[in-house]
Amino acid sequence: MGKQQILLLGATGETGGSILNALLADIEAFNVVALVRPSSIQKAQVQELIERGVEIRVADIEGPLDDVVKVLAGINVVISAIDGLGQLAQLSLATAAKQAGIKRFVPCAFTIVAPPGGVMYIRDTKEEVYRHIQRLYLPYTIIDVGFWHQLSFPNLPSGRVDYAVVMTETTEIHADGRMPTMLTDLRDIGPFVARIIKDPRTLNKFVVTYSDVLSENEIFGLMEEMSGEVIHRKYVSGNEIIDSRARHQATLKMEPDNRPVRFVSMKEDYIYSKYVRGDNTPEYAAYLGYLDARELYPDFRPRSFKDFIAELLEGKAVKPYPTLDIAALYQEA
Ligand SMILES: NC(=O)c1ccc[n+]([C@@H]2O[C@H](COP(=O)([O-])OP(=O)(O)OC[C@H]3O[C@@H](n4cnc5c(N)ncnc54)[C@H](OP(=O)(O)O)[C@@H]3O)[C@@H](O)[C@H]2O)c1
Image 1: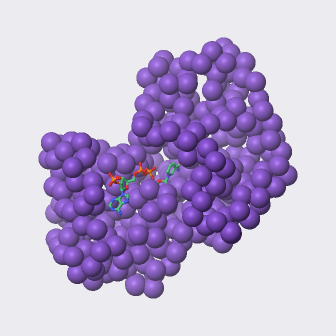
Image 2: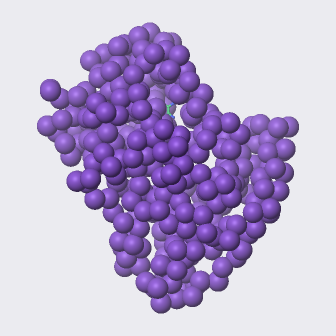
């Protein structure tokens, strides 16, 4: 088989960056083109892509369809790693991909395993894209990854891991902390994706990746054992999670464009799905029909959560979204 021509949307982002690194590392198999929106062409990150030898194609995916079809000339596989709130912009990209004869469309999933229909707003917007793809009869692969290692550790009293913390309230234990949840290191999303898109078994399938399945109690225990510190836990009950989620959802019904409340509500959806319902497990993924990437690629050993914690404690972890002020996003909620 010749090289696959890949068009990657989101190469300057966190998930897309992980995918880009893995595709560039396999030059025998892939040639990567980055799709960049017109408003971002001058960004330093786009210049870095050019310096790494990545071909840039510029298009507004919500602009005229013919222009998007043209941008897909010569491409076999489209991968989208668009940000959480941008999901529906992929609808016209999928339509264009069908017209361009794309052999595999990988829409932006890359989230936790959860059912469609009212559990997670973000999942439901992604599902809208998946249903559009299926109506088009466009070949696809949906890849979910559990929760990132980089977002799954608590703060320590000494402050020694603060440098890598993205989220606020990291010492909360939800609904007794016993629900197991799948975790993947952000850096391993790319290597998994590179294997999955070469594999005919994953065409028109859902696939899930993970390195570990751990509960919050196990994660906190591991952090304490490896750091020698005692974490002050803040317990949040299942009912408190359900009530707060319902309050924010009611606000969004009246104010759907309220961004701070949307961010809080999306975070609460994750908490509700992972820790109250317990959706993000290999067993539930199998029930929903996902293939298990660990079974498909037994040769690939993803970074364990324990190894990630060791790096974190050595001061060597890299904080995702280095310029994002997450507290400001939640400010008015
Ligand atoms: N599993 C987890 O723990 C977890 C955690 C976080 C996110 N996620 C999932 O991962 C997905 C990707 O999120 P992320 O946080 O990795 O993304 P991100 O870092 O915010 O990056 C988004 C990328 O999409 C690009 N983009 C946005 N709109 C575009 C458009 N209209 N045309 C072209 N490019 C566009 C951005 O380019 P610019 O340079 O132009 O801005 C950027 O490269 C999300 O959908 C979310 O569901 C999962």
